[in-house]
Image (cartoon, rainbow, N blue to C red; front, side):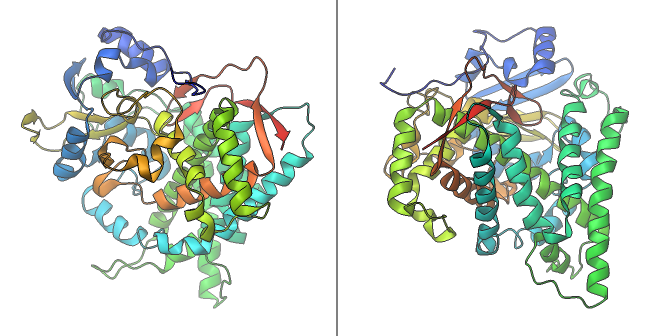
Amino acid sequence: MPLDHFKPPTPPRPAQPLGKLELLRRGRRNLLEMFSEKLLNQDYNDSKVLFQRVIICNSPETVQAALVGQHAAVERKSPQMRHALEPLLGDGLFISDGPVWAQRRRMVAPVVHVNRLHLFAPVMVQAAGEAAARWAAQPANKPVAMLEDMARLTAEIICRTVFGRALGAAQAQEIVEGFSDYQRRIGQTDLLSLLGLPDWLPRLLSPGAKRSARRIQAVMEAIIQAHRRARAAGEVEDEPTILRLLMEAEDPDTETNFTAEALRNEAAVLFMAGHETTANSLAWTWYLLSQSPRVAAKLHEELDRVLGGRAPTLADMPALPYARAIFEETLRLYPPVPILPREATEDCEILGRPVPKGAMVLIIPWLLHRKPSLWDDPDLFIPERFLAENAAGRSKYAYVPFSAGPRVCLGLAFGMTEAVLCLATLAQKFAPRLADGAEVRPVCRLTLRPEGGLPMHLDRR
């Protein structure tokens, strides 16, 4: 092992593929426990789980063929993901497909485009500064739950950027708690699909999950109605918000606007994507930094040299390549959505291999990002691999934390900017340290989280 390179924990990988019942048992507990060492080193795997055909693409070539070459045939999200999220997101962009997806993407893409970042970067820095003030008031001997703290920070940012001042603290808390409760309650696996039962057959959703979904939707509907009333009364909003931009968005092909229901669904998608995944990844970043003094020292040197104690701005982003590399390496080791499931809606081929209609096609960043043939020392935390001089020539399909192809995450630039600005703001003043005796275990439900919330002490620099 190279000197001073940290090897973060992973669930143990069995040497050989698991039997079907053991596979399901482990998957219900933690999806990351399902993958064997043999599968990690394969480029392509075609198997059956109960009655469901499952195809895994685990090389840049097969990933590109699936997500780009056969996009039209495998664009639909898996039945499990659709049934898990539809009660909350409706026909939102994340789980829609076909004409609905195409129209929504045409309308949402300009709203979250990189050229809008100047509107929202100051909000990110302001919220990060408030988090720094909270950290400064925290007793030195009392650890914080880092995952919870980063969730609070990213919720503040996404609430302000999406909803603006229209969202009060109580409403924001309702949404945050509702999303967290919903994820705890939904099922891990869609057993009915694995048994070969049709997609139209209703899946059972717990009463608690239904309540959480209704709770979130009610708050969002009230905010949207308030915005609509203000616009109808001729009240001009003086702050740019994503919700306002969505309300003004028009589909260039049909010259139509979002309905109230569509606005609610897309706002829910943006909140889920902008809050949950970035919070998880920032929490993992602090943990990895706490275990790698070499990386932390290089980060602090860059921040001190570029910023000199002042708050970062969007213009500083190009001068912070190491901070960005740290976050990119975190996304490699702990991709926020470690499994990207698709369903084939028609017969097709992936590099000459037949894929029948109804097959589940999986791209698994958790495996792809740790494949020895693609990455040197793949299990080690080495941010330098993402510096420009070291990343040249690497296939973009070897690294897909935001997916790839036509369905690449629209919030990629927003999330990356948010993470680097928050990291730059907080790391200038603090060096979080893992609490003594804390066990760190990555667990995947819908997203990849550190079990136990990562208790950390907030050491001052």
